[in-house]
Amino acid sequence: DEDNEIEQEHNMFVDRAGRYRNMDLVSSQVGDVRPISGCSFSPDSKSFATCSWSGHAKVWDAESSELKHTLLGHAERLTDV
Image (cartoon, rainbow, N blue to C red; front, side, top):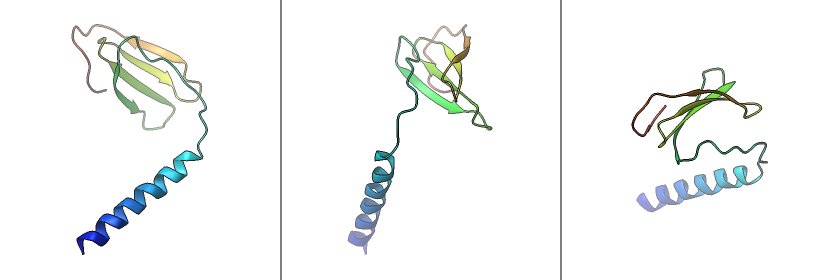
């Protein structure tokens, strides 16, 4: 029934939140001077790319959070990478 499905979905999200609560912050980095609007990981998970409203796309090392490349040239906000 519908009430049971809603309760099951609620329990699933509560369970996930409990697992994430035990995670530690390993690294933090300011990605851009404007809001970050997108983030995607490489297929091997060794790097990730971000984009922002500044029009910049950036490539980062996933383990160290070190900035590897800044891709310039967009005149408008970026919304996905």
